[in-house]
Image (tube, rainbow, N blue to C red; front, side):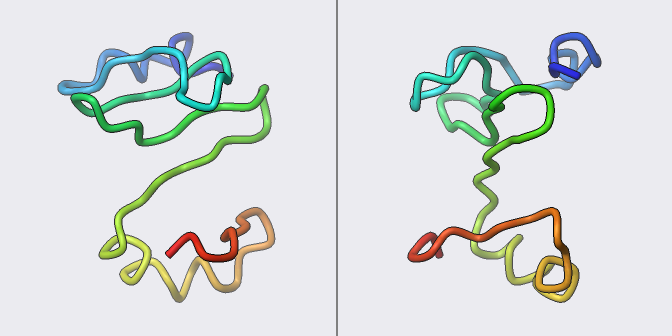
Length: 72
């Protein structure tokens, strides 16, 4: 489901727009792109290093997530 249909755009401090990569939709906090979507079943998220470290135990065992090489 696209975020504007799910109500995500109503979150305080978040806005929607076109992603820097050219994909159709992204969520921004100010001018910082947090996540952008590639269709209904794929998204690229940009968590902070601190958030990645905090979630590392769960992220390392997930088959639904892929961490790109040299991405942090």
